[in-house]
Image 1 (cartoon, helix red, strand yellow):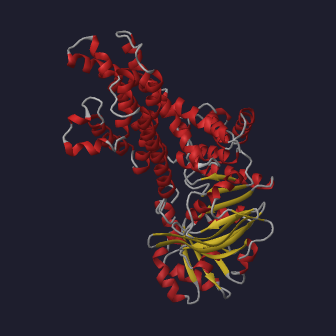
Image 2: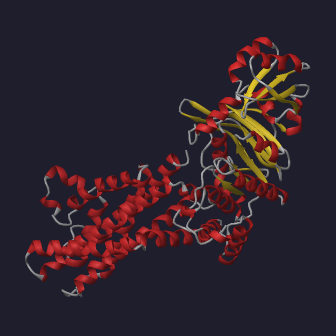
Length: 332
Length: 245
């Protein structure tokens, strides 16, 4: 993919190898100015390595990196003033309080004392952390830590904000708040580059999405274009009175051409390219002592697109998320 | 980008959160006091002995006040990933590492003042060549701090930083000519003495206090400055290689 004239980030042929492991393999994409760009993939896909290369924490073995039409491949350090970075784990100073952390981060970007003081207080207010301004960072909850880390990432008004898994491991309310904040930031013109393995998050926030699997970029497109891949595909979700995952093999045998997927909360999804006759399906469950309490057609989601395009089993991703596997790995 | 703002604030934060803590301050006073008393009692020759042990106590106060302190604080920040945030800031790596080391250098130099003040109460120090002493103190503080930086880049755990610091410090204490003349060491150990930065600092201190330097002051200071530059450059190269991987 070639860089466009308005690319906030443009990378081409980006490659990173750790010994025998090819963490990032000839990745090429561009992030347009003022868009929210999602980098989606399972743990170990190469998301964090890519973000580390783009922010100057890792060096590529090959490829080029451009920010706002200037080449920074050999010296990303010189572009760091343009970017705000929110890593996957909060990395502020535990012995400093919230206000001191923000002031200090402002100073790291060369902000004058009065300017960083004003901006720090403004951000604490915006992020609902004013009450904890004088509390030590190590006394913050996970959600508060993540919010303060985002505040620290934008204290110097960066033109592009890199976020690595911004809502992983925090409560639902904080995650929602963070998503709202990111949407607000983007509205004010900040380009947002975020990695995530939460498909729902990418679907809600991102203008364009890149799928990365095993270090390779599989597809970059808008959500609308990506969903076209599964148009014509029917998805029916059945609500059952009990968990019927034990019947998956029998279902697949009884209904060839239909893919079945057990969902949380005693639900079952059927995916098919053909019209699906519900009566035989309901009868099948009844014969196996399972009641179908509801059946509804659902629109294809990004999750379906991802599975379709990458062939990666989402069940495996969920398990990885639950187990927290692969975090901090060299190729993650 | 105003690098000096970042530089000053990194130094200020480190001084406040690490170096100016009560345990560190008390260590800076107790350590030289304990060393002075130990040698004083051991020699049994009264106050007249103080000038002969002063260079050793000054050098040890700096060495022990800088090396592990910097190694521990950098390793601590690296482990907690806050050091990563420093690396992501638009501050040149050289300026960043100088800011991180300036606190330890300042504390090391301040530690050196403690035994000098204590000695001034008991003996006449008017014969001391102060500029030589100040130059030696500064360069020993810088080289010891950069040794701490070198150690910090070589380890990943805080306890390793402590252990590795001692691996360098204790042999240095006995081989640098502070308490035993290098000429009195076994022949096979003498070459080791000359690859230790403290040897040259100790020689300047002996010259400044007792006029017993073995080598010219300018040569000692030049070699010590070269050690400082080499340790800093090697540490920077290792940071580039190991931390920006």
